[in-house]
Length: 111
Image (cartoon, rainbow, N blue to C red; front, side):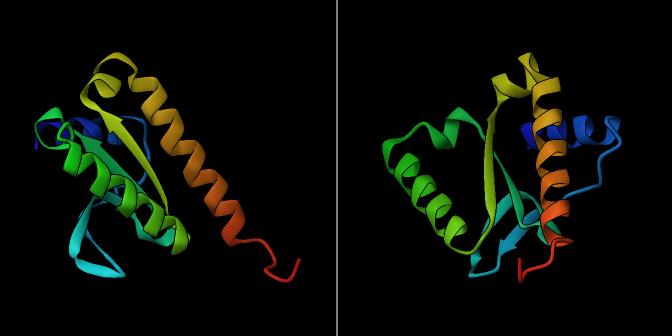
């Protein structure tokens, strides 16, 4: 999608690692995350109005996000407006989450 290409371009320009595209959700492989950093359990969902503005889709997305949290994944959602009007915030958010998850993965799980 155009939205996905815009997100990838912003991440590349910022020097961030390349996420996996259309990544199969591990606990529900018939579904996909738009972009994902599986090693960090970070998913990026890009919400265009065409699909995500319907009430049923809105509800489904929220349930999917809650299930992701149960599986220790973080899901962040961005819209076209976010990427166009606040691209620095998009990049900063992704970079910050990757950094914090990198710190958590290196932490001693017994403390």
